[in-house]
Length: 207
Image (cartoon, rainbow, N blue to C red):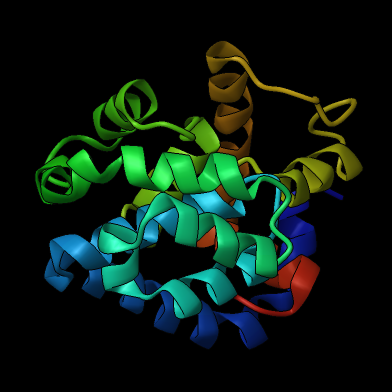
């Protein structure tokens, strides 16, 4: 059985949740303030090598304005309290990336792959997975988020032999093409298909 066929089993129950969550993503991308977009970028930086639930807790505790104004020392303290694996490094990324706050809206006017490349090149703590995650969370549908859960599913359903420990650009794009084909077979964009995959694993679309 291919991955798209397996995920079909949860389509009916997941579809309303996926559509509502993606509506929220689109609204953030279209109507969100510069600071709200930056908060979402910071969320994606924080979840790398951590967890979506931890990132949401941090986002709530720090607040939209906190990502823009809180000192690096205080951010480190908050992330330490939340048991982040790399509190100092992530706090440093958040502070050093603040020059991006007023550039993110323009970024969303670019073609998705171009916007992703720009983020990977210019933002600290952002690789292809994190850039794809951010762009999906502001309503971009065309990119795949190759996190460990998705890669594990790709392995389990025979798309790859093993979960890679790290991904070069070339490897990321080649695996993304495989997942895009599964999304096409499922009848959804890669961004929405990711939410179905998340529900398939976690029974939630909070991501």
